[in-house]
Length: 222
Image 1 (cartoon, rainbow, N blue to C red):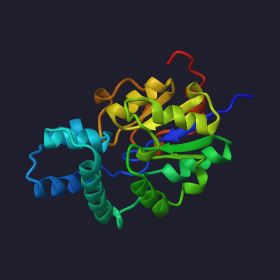
Image 2: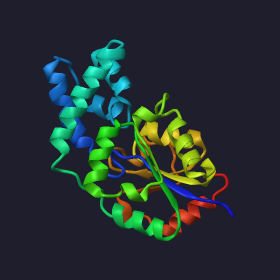
Image 3: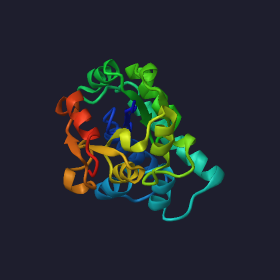
């Protein structure tokens, strides 16, 4: 009997964190006299791994101890800003409960550090409902590389084509497509025109139900 899974990105998919990341990056870049625009945040921050973001905005390659120090500083600033603001995207917890009631395997796969994931899982209380939990430390290649989704599928014992992945960014949707999964675009950070083609789009989890997930899984050439 085939097994099926639903996998969620975190930022912009489980929680609408991007405005808080933007504020953290603004404070962080201002400290280091790094220039930025709102358009650059949209194009080069949302859904990207910190190594890409740092290299792009600092306009040089940042690696090893310097990268670790800068990442820890910025993410610590984000967690301080966000810790009293943790809340799910509308309908997420109810949708997750419905998936579990139907027997779906579920996972979370984020490019963010595990400390950020722990903050959000702790605030929303869904950790026990995820059979696979992966953060940036768990992979060596980051989105749009499919590694994190292929590893998630493996953890869940499910073939990638039997997974539905919820993503909100260009690189994240690309990673899901590259993994061979079905993709639902979550329109919290971008419009559908700004994302690669997805099989379904939602503004929040009131725009999707279990029946729609099952329909997506029947698509052979999505």
